[in-house]
Amino acid sequence: MALPLIRSLPRHVLMLGMVCAGVCAPVLAEKADRTKPLLLESDADQPCAVNLVTRSSRCSGNVTITQGTLLIRADKIETRETPDGFQLALAVGTAARPAQYRQKRDNVDEYIEATARKIDYDGRAGLVKFEGAAVVRTLRGAAVTNEVQGESVSWDSVADEVRVQGGTVTPANPTGRTRAMITPPASAASAPAKAASVPLRSTPTLGDRR
Image (tube, rainbow, N blue to C red):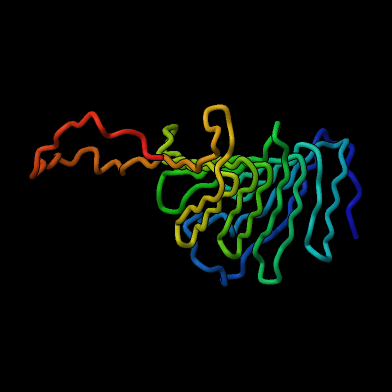
């Protein structure tokens, strides 16, 4: 049975006790997140329903879900719990107001942040898919260490791998090429540089690769 809208609060605050029962596969997103309750919020004047039988929800209106360090924001979010206690979520935004994602990586002081028109989160598979003008970043503190842009980007937190398909066409990228910026680890910056065994020679004939 769906719960009625709660109009006595400025925003809906619905606490769902969704906890894995010791059968979760290891992933490189923050492991403690899956043992935390899921908090769902949405504007009070927008429809929001939670079905306690199917362990699912569907909300609209500046929706936010949090579970430990996991944070997803979007205009519309649907959630569902698998029989073995994992959380699934589909967040839908717009080109002007894309859906947002943030989660800490396990055992390191780094976060994955992303925006896209649609975010498909699968807590059981440890997979997040970002569809539509997707931008996925790794942050160490406030510094962006890695960034991937494309029409479709997926983050496999089990393999700790990001895959990108199709570039996003922008005035700065009219051909829609996929783009990735990868920063060397902090340890590489302090390592002494090795002398080149063969000196490099400049040439005026080397141009852009087409």
